[in-house]
Each structure stands twice: as structure tokens, then as C-alpha cells.
Length: 276
Image 1 (cartoon, rainbow, N blue to C red):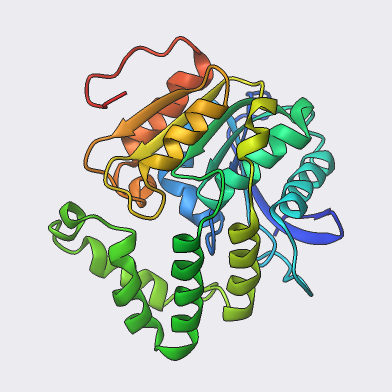
Image 2: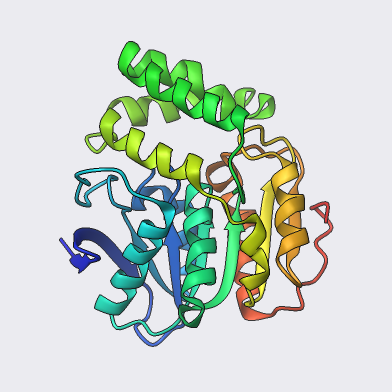
């Protein structure tokens, strides 16, 4: 299995697509790993050299020995790109991965060509802190399936719950997941997420940036989208009508098409099925 040594840690990664295609790096959210990108990477690998990896404390990557920050995780990414001899890449980040992607674009701008931020945030708040720490407590208090049944309504919309088998399949996959994140690892990623704050530094993001948010996302609601659009000069926002935080899974085809169009042509056509 492919591993790279980055920022003192062993990180698992995968690469898909033609070696001479433009690079596209995918950064996962809290508790996620490279497998969650398959609905998008399978559609994007025909045009890009797609790199997905597991953040520290996730999937097949090394577990941390103590607390860390989103800046530390961005340094992991910079180290990974160096190990893979990738001088510059497009970057897509989801949720916590969007925070890492922002930090990468702010602190290592020479590495980022174009930036796509999916369902993310620019600063924590008391509500999010209580929510995430509540989730952390529940991971220890409840059996895995019960924990998922309690928390997935924050990820999936009421429309999603009307699709036969969608949520049940998601629960089944996670219950049987051999790489399911340990509570201590979740805690460390969660605390890094809570402490992240980029609002006063967003002006430093100079690369073309696309934001994609779900209209019905209650984990990263549209108030975060408004702050990001206000702070990132020239950024473009697309809102997916009726979508929640899980749109990477439920609307993978639409999201992949948006990313593909954005990375190939900054002058995106105005999509009729999305509210700008």
C-alpha cells in the first residue's frame, strides 16, 4: 500500500488518472478517509491525476500522539505534496478538509492552483463546539449503530430519508467499517476543527475559488458560505437546492460536474439547477 512520510507522520494515499494530467488533491472531513471520495474521484480521474489520502488520525494513516491544529494538518498536506513531487495542484476540501484547504491556500499559496471548498466553514462558534463535543461523548456512550442513528439526521436531509435504503445502507457500511475512527482520534480532529479560524485571513487566498454548499445543510449552514464569499476575493458560490451536508454522496454527479467545469474554465456557465 502506498504511504508517504510527511511532517513526521506516515500518510496513506492513492493516485488515479493519467500521470501527465493536471493534479487534483482531495482533502477529507472530520472522521473521513480516502474512500469517501470515490463518488467524485471515479468521475474526475478521466481529466485529472486525482490524489486522495487519509488525514492524520484517519483511515490507514498514522495516529497522532497529542493535540494538533488545522495548520499542522495543512503542513501534513504540504509535506505529502513534496514527497509526491507535486509542485502545484488543484485542491478540493470538504468540511474540516475545507478548513485544511483554506489554510493550505493561505500559508502555502504556491502549492494551490484552484480551490474548491465544499460544505465548510471559516470559524467555529459555541453551537458547533457543543455539537461536536456532544458527538464525541456519544461515541463513547452508545453502540456504533445507535450512535449513527442518532447523528446521521444532522448529515442527511428529510428528502434523503425518503429515498428507500439510502440511510440504512450508510449505517450498514459504517457499522461494518474496519477503519472506523477511534474515539481518541475523533477527539483530536474535533478539537483542531473547533479551534480553526480563518475569517480575518481569507483575503490572503488569491487563487480562483469555488464554494459549493447545500441549501439544507445544518452542519455547515449558509451563513458560513456568506462569510467565505465575502472574505475570498472573486470567489463563486453555488448552492445545491435541497442538499444537506452529505451531498458528496447523494449528489456526486452534480458536484463532480461543477468541479470539472470550474477547474477547466473559471468562467463557469450559470447552472440552471442550482441557486447562485
